[in-house]
Every structure is written in C-alpha cells, then in structure tokens.
Length: 389
Image 1 (spheres, rainbow, N blue to C red):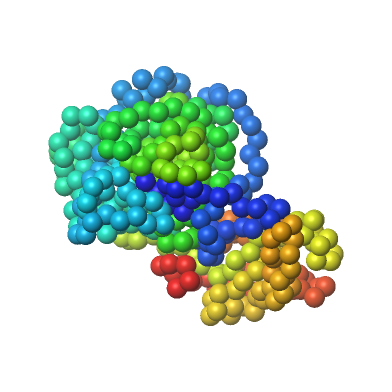
Image 2: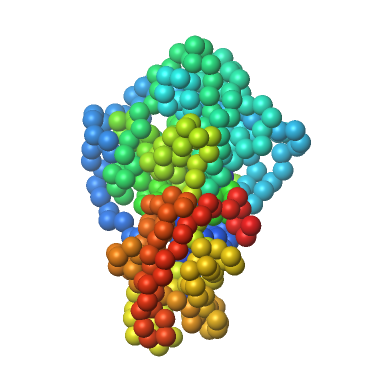
C-alpha cells in the first residue's frame, strides 16, 4: 500500500519536535511523519463541502460504482520497497482508484501503477475489467492519472470537496480493496491535519490528512470521503508499530493537491514542482537559547544542496554540530525570517511560499546571519526526480 512512513511504520520526529522535512523543494531525511501545525479540535458537523450528511451505507450506495479495483502488472516479480510491498502475488500489484469525470479519467496513487506494463480497472462490484492508460504519474505527490474507455463506464464520477475545509473530528468513509477484498467500506474521523509524509521519490507531501478509518495494503489510491460522499483525499499510507496491519493511523493526500496535480498531468503530461535546495527545521525559543541566538523563531537552515538555487543565492548551512536533548543539530547556518515580505515563524511558512510558485519564478528571503538581517533572491528550478539527485 504505501510509502514514506510507509505502509510500514513511520516515526514521529523528535528533537524537541524540531526536525522538519520540507515539502517538495527539499530532501526528506528518513521515513518520518510530523505535524506541521497543531489543528484545532472540531465536532463532527456539516460535510466538508456542505450538503446533506449520509450514513456510511448511503455513501457506499452512492459512490461505490465509481470506486475502482486496480491491478497493475509488472515485468518482474513484486518485491518489497521502502514504501512497503503492494498487495498481490508475483508481478501483479493491486490497489484502488476512483472516477473523476465523464471522460473515463481516474485518480490513484503513483506507487500503485508506476512502472506497470499493463493496468486493469474494474469499477464497482460487478463491472468489467477495462484496460487503462496511465496518462501520467507524479512521484512527488504520489498521484497518478488513468484513463479508460468512457463508453464502457456506467458509473457517475465522484464529486471533489474542498479539502482545505476539513476539520479534526469530521466523519469520513474510506472505500477500497484492502488485501484484494474489493469494495470494502471503513469509517472513522479526520484525526489530524497538516501531517507530512514521504513521497516515493524521497521528497515530502504536505497538508496530509490523518484518519483512523481502517486502511490496509490495497486501499492505496482509493477515496477518503466526507459525510456527503465527496472526496477529500486519496488514501495513501499507514503508520504501524510493526507488520502491515492497520492500527488507526492512516494518511490521505488531500484532494486539493491531487486535483491540481491531475490538471497539470492532463494538460501537460506531468506536474511541475519548484525546488530551492535546502533542508532544516523550525527555530524554537529553546533552540535559540541553546545556541545563543537573539531571535526565537524562523526557519533554521541545516543543509544547502550544491549548485541549487539556494546555493547560487548564497544561503549558508550550519557548520557546527551540537547535541540538544540527545539529538544532533547542525548550527551556525542562516535563519530565514521572512519570505516574499511575509514573516516566517517556521519551516512550514517557507514551504508554503515555495510551493506557491512555479519553476523559473523567484523568491525573496530575508535571512538572519551574524547578528544582521539581509535579503537574498533565488530563482527556483524544477524539482529533481529523486532526492539527492
């Protein structure tokens, strides 16, 4: 089923909650899951996108015909990866997906179909297995777009909600094919917002939804639905203490992210992501006190990728290593305190600023160095195919 924190155990980052894995513009350091920002608790109320709340059975009856069982055949035998072994035997991996328009377009996870020589899609419980074209995959967000013959589709496409409106406590329903058991329905709530998980190419996916709805291998690519049956996310990963079973900690790529990526793939065949080439984390008051800094918030740069936009702009990484609460931290680097004129309280603000741009655009960063602030400008580039490349 998934990746990063994997379908196998993801670790919550320690070191005072500090170490940040920035979004697609920096390199992820290990298979970690973190909370980018504390989310306020909210009582289950209206559906994310508005409309009448339905029971789980009513949602299944409404959307089940548009949820797909996906089989992806690979040339060689299926082997385990850092993202967990797909469900299936030999060279066949199984997963889930869902119909999003009347042209036969479906969304699923990239890790379900990437590298497949042939992909079969069965919609609903009694649908025929249709040959699917892989229109494109985006490893940076773990999103893939498929297309089948629209004339052979009898299901109505699913409606997409505004995943930015999701709140902790909202009821959700997951539909998919765990362990190849097609059309399986599980229920739960939105457990947390703004998680980060590793993508198949080692970068990070941000603003991820956490849910306690049961998700297992084979659920990958299936829809996470609000209480009116609208899609708010693509079920992608689970974190476990060991093994492959669900323990109530699942992650879904937000549909706002997936929809944007899908639009780019359908238009251009690929999705573009900006890259600056830094890694680091949040500067907290505790860290500032430990390293004797006069400021107590910002984004502390640990590393700068050689020949990256950050390197070309003169951003400086940490030069010394010190131990804080049992963890090692590289210190002495620049601290980003503003991005495009907006104050930065932590790495997440820099992530948002970079993610809001396209390759070729510039970003202005105000950095604190040697007791002074200065402004640097960096021209962003296309994200590498893999971290470290």
